[in-house]
Length: 184
Ligand code: AMP
Image 1 (cartoon, rainbow, N blue to C red):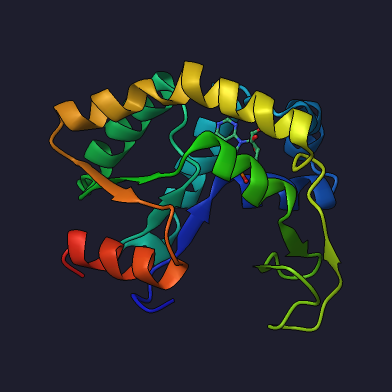
Image 2 (tube, rainbow, N blue to C red):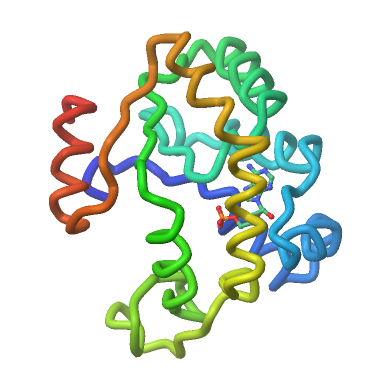
């Protein structure tokens, strides 16, 4: 919001697709409920389509994508076609047990997706726990991360794009550090 550029969150796009009962949502639901990755072709199609929208011309933040090497390679190809290379790949580094605690106690607003602990302070909407934020599914998501996503750390280090930030601190401190590291 501060930079006036869109955040493209593949998780949010998929949750909206499930809510609206679209074919993509129906395909994705069982993978998401299990904490597994939705197949690459589905995700790459979604992101490619979204990057073609005019609000991305000034820049964009990708959240939750890429999560596999195939997605990273497809993203490189799409961005070089658009003539808009990535400026950074941000790793917000947090210990696994801290992640388990955070996700299992997280509540989101049913209406606008805002994350907080009680009633949504933004719109007053009802808060709920994501279906995949129970402990067993969170632990599977972490295993999937280790196996399929963590190799991307070396991939982006190799491209000289990796920016690593300690995420186990107050959110305002993490945010300030991210802005400093990205020279924003
Ligand atoms: P998130 O909201 O980023 O935590 O994503 C929630 C779930 O959506 C993940 O556990 C996956 O099932 C699915 N998902 C989101 N982004 C991706 C992606 N880039 N590749 C595959 N599956 C994804």
